Length: 137
Image (cartoon, rainbow, N blue to C red; front, side):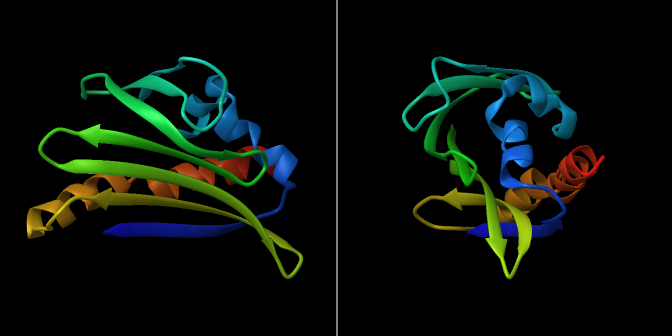
């Protein structure tokens, strides 16, 4: 089960990329972020920990990092499944886009899973607008 949002942004891939890869810039667009620590370089296989407001610290692993194009991580949530947070930068017809998605992977899905995923995804469009505002200054 996956939810996505795609937004046109008037900036280059190079201007957008640091908002994903530089952990010090993540709090600019992730309002509930208290801390984000990578246990190495921003590359596939690197693990880390994230602490969000009112949520216990969680471990994650970077599953894909393609400079100026894609940043994806997986967080395993006990009792819920695996959450994949994808951040993509693309160019189509002369325009630059950012796309964020949240995907829940598990054996079977329930109505409660959709509610959970909606809750996780709820702040994604607003976060994307913050990136847009920052890079278009």
